Image (cartoon, chains in turn green, purple):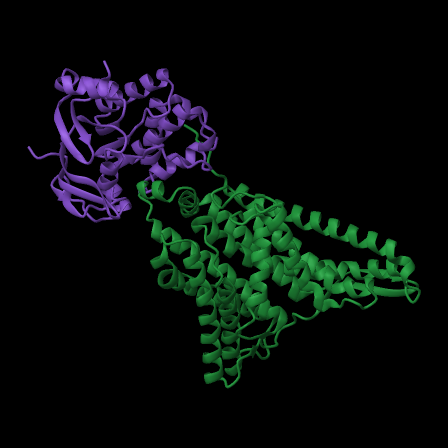
Length: 382
Length: 238
């Protein structure tokens, strides 16, 4: 007899389609808002044409926003997976991300000291970036599992506030551990992602004509790599959760822990796997973050962690599709705010106010739609 | 002959509350044994103690003479005890197919999984029509069939059924008890059945135990109990 199977192809194509929809949908929405604002505020400035400037900046702002959005989405999945299974917010996730960032940087610094980063071809350089991401995944995944074992599992069954406090404690502990390690070994507590390869080169998408001047709209190879790697993480996670036996077990544990045990599922092992997967995603995002922004320090996980948490809440905490949507929306908003805020307000609000948007969204969502844009949980098929 | 499942002087606590006060019972291979009693007598607690969700503070649970005490639920399942929990425990957002696959979680052999699933569909044709539907969208009766079918995927040596008739319409209750009889007769499944519907349970069972506030007060063959004046007065309401 022919049983309907969860189709592997479907499990890959579906999240890709959703992501495409989210990216184009939110890009168009945010762009329209900004363009409308530009027309409205046109009269306020005589020194430049706001509308024209808006159009000129738009492609680059979109690319930056989408890149950032994919990173936020990847981190947000870690929050959402753990929340879906345990209804617990792992506030140490930002620090797990930070360890991934350091791990990626450290392995490349180690290789640079051995001269492995000089005179290498493009493909090798790309392979090294992938290696850094994989290192981040392994370190962060294992760290997340250890944190769960030591700081959360013994508290399971206690009132909900208790593990939350424990998570905040772990967060400080990990920050200071990394600071201690870095300052005692390297004398300084920040590190920089080594420069190598052709990643800062730009790939010209198209050229716009602006009053006779030709203006290139270009995308850095770096951004392309980041988007592709993050995309693979997101699709891979969807595949894992929807089409594999372990993924089904994760969903079963998320829906009904006790009954899952009666199916012969080792609930503790599944929870550990959930932390492993969520941590690995955080580590990958950390390494990508270091790749993009170069400098990492022990506190680098705090803001991205909070923002990714906001993204998870925005999409509906516990919902995998929601985390991807929330991440992309948040990345775009931040990128738009950073570029347009000061132009539109005549410099009254600079790019440094961009974070207001993330947290204003967090508050608004918690007040008006606490279940998030998409609601539901990890138990749900993404 | 040693019993398939045996409880010896089992004491289980919820925190300070002494829920089971020395339960001893036996289920032999091929039997349907029912455990009846009113709300809060400790019926579900007994099943949860057997399947490792709860651990007894004193006493022993033995499966074919092998102690099952203090091992986690997923190991108890591995040993061959299937538990259909109170309220069915269908995973609401997994499809019927995925629910059944979870029943066969410990099994690797794909052909064997397919064979068992076919068996479940033969027993419950309605589940076959609904394979793609999320468990939570099924009717109460269908959910109970799914929960039983899912336990059958484990091919347990003994199946624990916790109030399978709860919340079902009378016609469905009858259907569920027919299924229990068929499971026992056609599939040779040994069953420990917990019920509030004493009448129906005694009609389907070989033997019965009556549980009162954590203790077994009466036991005997189902026929004896059906005609016992104490049972008639307290549980059959005739």
